[in-house]
Length: 360
Ligand SMILES: Cc1cc2nc3c(=O)[nH]c(=O)nc-3n(C[C@H](O)[C@H](O)[C@H](O)COP(=O)(O)OP(=O)(O)OC[C@H]3O[C@@H](n4cnc5c(N)ncnc54)[C@H](O)[C@@H]3O)c2cc1C
Image (cartoon, rainbow, N blue to C red; front, top):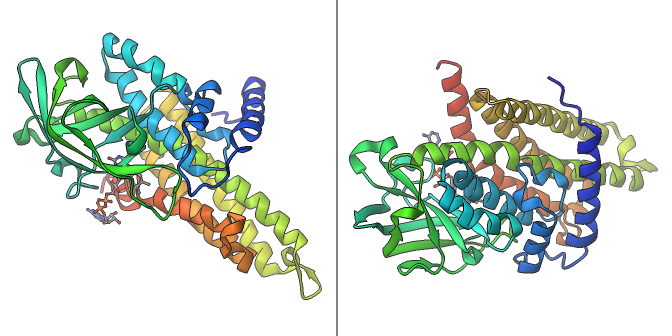
């Protein structure tokens, strides 16, 4: 295994990083506001919306990185991997250019980690399915042009009773809720959606009837691996900023970083970042090679999300009162990190997968 980057990858990274810094971060930096269509189209221009691993390329707004990742890994990739040529030709170009914003909807009020408890039904009626039900958490939902939706087609079949559909935003019977407020990833718009006798053409089904669970599971493999590269980027920025602060800020006659307790905290941040990075690179490498990567991806997702939360706490602590002052953006990194232990399968779900892969 060689995880070093090729010259070409290094050049691409530098190129995209400078464009992102100049164009995306130069505008409105209030990440409490939703990102704008103009920013989204810029992501399309930068080819980020069509890349498999866009989030490495650094953007200070984790909410935008999260939105791009959810769009790409949980909406575009299921269509790429399971859609037929007609639906791919109809939709993928718009998803990659930024003309279309994508979202995915599986979670329901009583079906979070337990996705097999879904209640949203899809019943065949001629050359359509009629969808009925409610989804409780849809990232990008308020601005999305299309949704990858999971619904039960055969309640008796459990895992094999779920089917995936593309539902376009103007479809009659699709009701898009008001955006709700969140403590982290604040610039990612999110809402509930519901289906009231919502008629979706059979042509909008992704894959076969009953293949939905498999499609969702595969999309989670993409999300748990590639999306989390964005958090490596956040942790790198966080460590750099915190080291700089620890060198500049002086207390008791010397820089904070010369107090051993502070230096050790920074050393621990570095250890967690590099350990998480290696786990993620190995997981992505195995996924890329077409090898079984289930264990590696869960190990990486757990390690990156935990490191992001612990790094967030350490960064605040070292910055002292500056760390909790919302004007400096240090506390925001913690608020953006906390949801990472919940979405794409909670930490407990990752431990369950790891334990099961260990034969327990
Ligand atoms: C930022 C963010 C974005 C999201 N975006 C989307 C989206 O775009 N589309 C979408 O469909 N959903 C989305 N979700 C929802 C997400 O998929 C769910 O939050 C997640 O699956 C957990 O479900 P839940 O919130 O209902 O928690 P629950 O499943 O109710 O879990 C609550 C707690 O109990 C624990 N728990 C549950 N079962 C067990 C068990 N068997 N053993 C031990 N512990 C257990 C969990 O680990 C967790 O700590 C998003 C969530 C977040 C936070």
